[in-house]
Amino acid sequence: MFKVRIRGIYATALTNLAQKWGYKVVQATGPIRERFKIDFDGAPPDLTVKDLEHKEGVLVIGKPEAVQDLLTKISGIEGVFVRKSIVELRSTFRGVVREVRGNETVVEISPGVYGRLRGFYPVGSEITVYVRRPTFSKNEYAELSEGIAVVQPYVTLLPGGGIKVSEHIRDLEKRKELLTLGYSMNIPGYCIKWRSSAQYADLLQLSEALKKAYERVVELEKTAKKSEPLTKISEGESIAEVLFASQAKRELDKARREVVYTVDGHHTFKSSGTVSSVVTDFLEHIASFDENLKKYIEDNLEKLHISFLKGRKLSIKHIKLSGEIIKLAPGIVVDVLKHGVILKRVFTSKGIYNGLNIAKEPGDYDLMEVNTDKWYVVHNYFSKKGDFKGTYISISTPPEISFDEVKYIDLAVDVVRAKDSEPEIIDREELDAYLEENLITKELYEKAIKIAEELVNKLKSPKQV
Image (cartoon, rainbow, N blue to C red):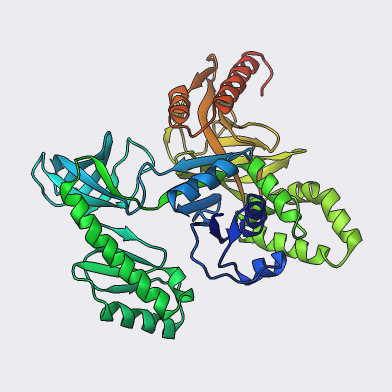
């Protein structure tokens, strides 16, 4: 049974799923303990799940076997996209210097996997390095540091010196205890980094943990000297970014609803801006006092939500499967649809319309149609005078619309049609790359292509999409 620590806006839903999947939830927050009627368990987790910075999914970090188990289970939910690190954080390798670029050295750490190391080292020489920052693609470099890293539940040892205490340990007495212990058991050549779980351990456990970490360092130093090049010397922690599309958030809404009252769109709203989050909390709070009001909210929330948006300015979040988020120019809601909105985005600078290769002039505008039941968003571009310039359709997961923003996960392939030109599919090679890197399934790949082909056929007819 793996032990999991869960934090963030998805905590209730994921705790419910984790328990169903056979995990033991540890270091749970007060609200989670109350909702699930569980006692506090301070044991160090095998893996931690917490919000990504942009809230559109979660970061999973921990023991490789535990992380992989969770990813396998969570990938069964529709609308989940997983991007796992190629190498583990703080894993140690016997690398080979392949190239020197400026003030950096390129080191091959595993066949076909490379990292960047600061400083100059002779090309062809062997060097022991650990992964300071992992990479999620073989086309990118990991960030490396020289030496050996040891990762233990309560403490991490890294080359250097001094004592560091996790910022999540806020108790001053505990911090003092950890600093004192670290200095009393000083390990020459290494920095002692106390991890957040150390706050729940007693002095005997901490002393034993530090002793084991030191013994592991001594063992690995010997191993490194006799290791073959391009071999892993020690394991680190796997990292994965898990994105939740609209379908996944609906499933998480259901999982949360089994535990506590949850409005439709809860996770869409909570992962959006302040207004959406506050409105969600308010609706769920007042619904808990009146069954009639609860039913009214359940029956009318989408209609009320969409109608409320007329005239509002919404941000637009274009989420790439690579993890990059592109914020498009915001738009004003000029019309509301049954399941969506039409935004007017006015451009203020010159440029070129992506994919259309036609000039963008100040005063041009985009009538962007967003429907939550469609697998695409439509951009219709016009000149300042209202003359049609072209159409750009981005194939995506079904968009989400909150009180603050429109967002969707881009599926790479697009359909374009310039004025007086035939429609065509572009960027298919990017979709091919996603399939090759296992960022999407074969089924989703084929679905995206099919939708694009259907849109091309529609654009060939006089009727607009």
